[in-house]
Amino acid sequence: MTLSDIIGTFGVSMLLIAFVLNQRRTISEHSRTFLTMNMLGALLCGYSAWLVSFMPFVVLETVWALFAAWGLLRWSPATAD
Image (cartoon, rainbow, N blue to C red; front, side, top):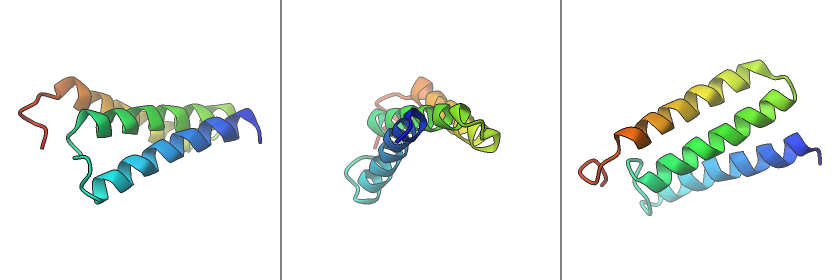
């Protein structure tokens, strides 16, 4: 495995774990945990895509990470489920 494979695998794993936990109603999509996992997972995936020069995925993951970061900045206990 290359470095980009390893980084991308961690990123995708983080995104999938957050999704599964949300689907099982273990964490809310409004929780800090979910938003943090999405932001970090997207950043790792985006960096992995950058390493292999796959720009469409870099754009997708950058937007994903920015929206997760925006959710974190706006987070308050009142918005969490």
